[in-house]
Length: 256
Image (cartoon, rainbow, N blue to C red; front, side, top):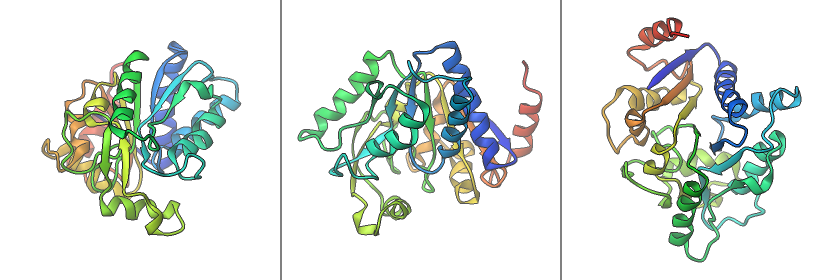
């Protein structure tokens, strides 16, 4: 992985957004993998600023969300269909018909998951996947012990993940227990991955994913197998990295 350490959380968002903007400028019909949660909010905010300034358009860009809760009504404000519409589609000016979210309300969830992978393939694959990382190392909703070969499927959320996400709901009991998520195998097929993390609360997960062993106990470590994965973190999220000085040096001396 290329590990880039920047001073602040705002810098994380700006640098990741610049990578995405470069892709969209060169490929106006690019396919993006869209993450939800708090980690990518700064990325979307910076992209929104560029759209407002007239320097960037997502009119032709296609998007696939990483995951969706099972059983949450489509109109629920915390369904990822609602979140993606509110935080990404509307502020960035996506054509809503170009953005797809796993169907967590389907009668046949296995079939819905299979069709989601098929839709990604029919779109030509994901050009750039945006990722955050959970405190337990999960990416998407691939909880610890997820197979590195896994495809989009139903998963049971870990208690810690449900607790972490309870801040978006009125009570922890309202957080769904199950989800549909792109699998690690699906994520690894993206041509490029950009993972962003901010804050000391993500330091242990980042260190384990980047410098720890390749292990299903840390799903984010699967990115060590990716051909083009970039991890952009602020100083707090980088605080557990043993080779932080090396990453700063290599980025400072990166060839043009």
